[in-house]
Length: 437
Image (tube, rainbow, N blue to C red; front, top):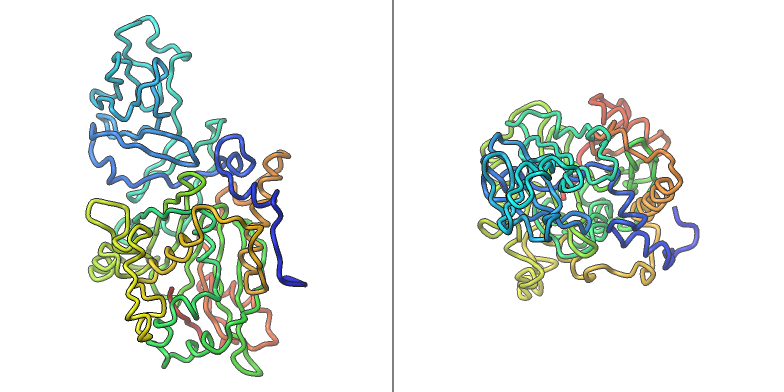
């Protein structure tokens, strides 16, 4: 992947990747896609209190009207700029308490005590954004044209409500900085080392510990990238750990087996230094069990972290140094001294600072997935400026399955992975399964 490490990104490239606000190249590119915005539980009932929502630096307010419709508006009233977060949500509209101007979910001014003739006037309409609610999650489209593309056909969206689960947490760092932990297969042998050692009897676990210099191969796809990390098993076989980056902010979590609950992260920019992390879990063939749901809600299973009650902030967080246990770290019980796989991931990405300067990095071959993803984003930003079609904009093939498989060295690994992704059986696979991070 990299001919002469270390590889470094330029200042110009870093600046493009860093910015998400309106008017920036990356910010305008991201606004072409549906954005996972907030959970339905945050506005649980008709006429429940509105909430503040910040996405890509935009300050917004969301509410559920008397009929249950979800509205997402610019936060500040077009009259005098008071925040609609303090508005009165009743009778099918959100009413500014300053002078009584009232707006429906489409942003239309439907009541105006101080100037009634402006009711329905487009000049005083509040900017409203299309929303889509499904499975306890609300997506928003922030593009200027108000003509959103199709929603991505994620497997999570195709599953029934009893077969899926969604949660979110807050992470105090740049969204791409947070995302890249999921496409960095080589970190597992160190950051999550105790998990590997606890399952050392599994035949493929020793491969992780023995081969820390995985070779990366990347295949461009209509949805983004298929990322294969190859490790040597013996002179005849390779172990392939395969996941996906789905344009622009989804990652497929590598699976331990093809029959387990499937998992996707969405890494959504709040602004240039904060991220919403949505965890989407589902099973294509059955309901989620009571035990699975209990562990997900407690933040002790799957791709979830333990959160403070009535909060989207984790119990172990940057503010309290993730409650690091130095004695457990010294004894080797916890390599990081921090409990929880997701908390360990959050710790390393937040520890880089709010937005790490990529020009200071020294990237090598094992960073192949990260380099390819950044390059793809930079290309998309250029495509957006040039008016070319964007990768994944049609939302197709997002139901991409992660694969872990041992294969003979002389086979086409992509062909065999595709068979497994489509639910088939590889005739040459030596073993399947890996480690769930």
